[in-house]
Length: 208
Image 1 (cartoon, rainbow, N blue to C red):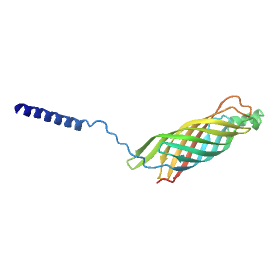
Image 2 (image 1 turned 60 degrees about the horizontal axis):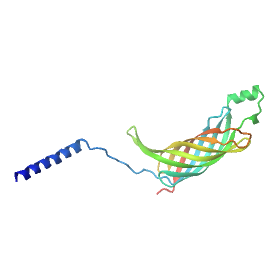
Image 3 (image 1 turned 45 degrees about the horizontal axis):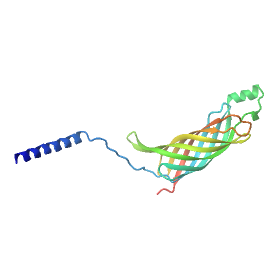
Image 4 (image 1 turned 120 degrees about the vertical axis):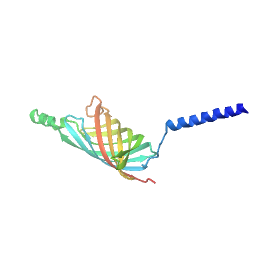
């Protein structure tokens, strides 16, 4: 009888000690929440810049449509951009002082393409203890067809971007991609790079 009582006291003491340790050190707690917004059909109205060329800076307007299959996978089925070339001072000096013809410079006139988008990161940020901003970060892999001054050239683009959600149906999106352009047509002999930086106003419709 005394032995059974002693065993019971030891067990009770062990349980109490474990409960105290659990309260003092609760361990890891996962608090994963569902996204506060759902993207389904996305229409983008965008402006952007092509900053890499030494002889001009390309300014463009773009429209695009993206279908979202889940919270992480989407497909930009189509996007089209028309470019205005703002000549740099270097190009103006070459044309003025050395008589270089304007046709000697290759410019992107317009381009269109399609992309796959993977969105592994989503979160929210408290701003000044006043409101919460929801957003996400994504990776991009796609293809682009560029119309240069003298020819069309295809390119493979890789990049990423982020989105800040304003309402259930409106968000602001920033994409930065590098297009590796294949040297076909127009006398091209080497691969080129076209960097695109795009700021979009995205309208989401069709969400529950």
